[in-house]
Image 1: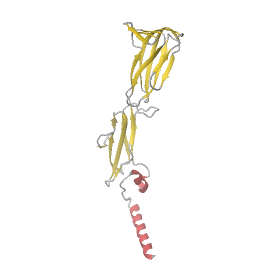
Image 2 (image 1 turned 90 degrees about the horizontal axis):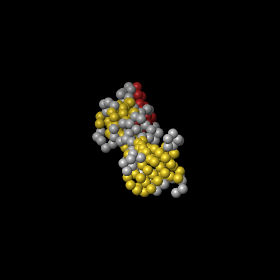
Image 3 (image 1 turned 45 degrees about the vertical axis):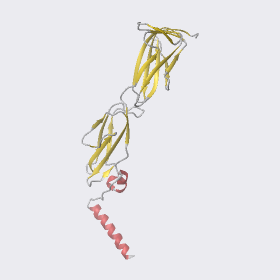
Length: 240
């Protein structure tokens, strides 16, 4: 019993000596272990900061500037890796131009040479608008009930009867969110249709007579868009 009390006293004495001297035993391994066992690590001693324009969907729609905030009394070196690239020593802020779903990893080293590696992070970056092509109708085409009869050099497309307006679009990064069709005649309110799934088609029927401007806009999930317009002369009497 006496021997155990002596051993406990020695342990307490060693702990007091370390704390009084301002020395904390180093901890090697995961950052969570370091934070939990080392009193100096009650807060994160090293964090990346990502600066860029982010949309509501969580996608950066600009290249991303990366810097670190850290405690220089704890952190001796910081290393980072973008995607499948090499580990790089951090010396100054840098920019990530890679697009898509980008893995970001970092680790930091304390003055005892111990390495701490937090969990990987994922950045979603898309600053390229989608691609868009109007398939039907074509510029200068004459259509009878959706079928191309012939083409002419005139700037206006002629539509006789109903037609299915068809577009092709792709966005290999964030993906297509929706396609918006808008048909305008003079200063009247536009007639619109939104398609969110394939095929991106608008079955244009009803009564339309005169000159119209068709605008098709493709939006990706990052909020970027591209559009195309077509002037048309339409003869739809709402019968067929």
